[in-house]
Image 1: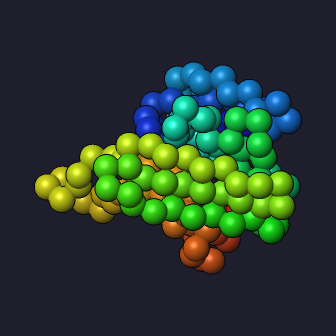
Image 2 (image 1 turned 180 degrees about the horizontal axis):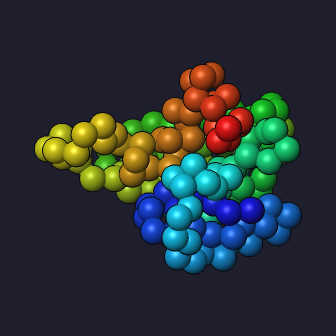
Length: 141
């Protein structure tokens, strides 16, 4: 499965959900912005992959996999200079603490938001918005 790097548009990775293996590579010419099955980034030293498979949403954090359509909770909060992203299910909780992205208050880019720089925030925002959750789960039509 191909997943988009959340930090750099010119990178994608081959991702194997069964092993958690990510093989980054340059984005192939002509690949549409919606031509992948998810996103990846490194947060707090952990490879985080948010992806769709078999009509469900999943989150891989190195060796832990969470079924986001199951009994899994996701939370994100601002803790001063750091962001905190938490995921929990019946198997326990994973807490990631990492530096926040840049201050966007003076960014002239149209429609830029903090979730463009923070995969944890993006995941939390998607999971708390049913319309966005459905859109990501469905993928490109």
